[in-house]
Image (cartoon, rainbow, N blue to C red):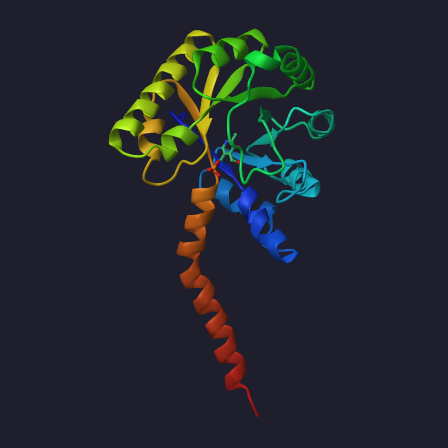
Length: 247
Ligand code: PXP
């Protein structure tokens, strides 16, 4: 049975934890295997210019060893386009990037950068990579995404996720619904993501034409909590085993 909605698991924050100590673990490749085994339809990785979490080698290894789709998130820079052309991910999600931001903040201004983004889409398409443009759910940006020849868009769900109160959240959801409808009419594949978690995901998954949700932080955060019991009991068992052998 083909799934009505796909899940792309963003494993950036597995690398965040590794980079915090400069250790070899936790390995994003191992996380990609577990995610794929649990039903992820794709793996998403954002190679940032400052390499704060995912490293070039991580993307290479996931590309080489993981069988599900690889969605390579990146800024539309000369460097990143070159890396994408070499690694050939299935999808490239183009995002705006600022060094000082904690995470991707707004969507791309496609309407204001049509030439540059059009050239990026062309180069990626020539490498057989499907481009997706990360945009706010606005008609102007959807139209521009269609004009520059991107086959897909990813609607930024940050405003929905951050909306304070039921009314504001319902308004943001309605924007996502209208944007998904407009994008579908324009012939685009509709994805969405950013800030989605276990309490707010279902209304977005229920939006008509939604193809894929890309989710990272909430999944890694839950894994930390629900994996903690096993992690503590395994450590304790190892310690007790060693202590019992004391002379
Ligand atoms: N989609 C895009 C384009 C993103 O930049 C991010 C954050 O890296 C995500 C999805 C995932 O967001 P979150 O980690 O909040 O689930």
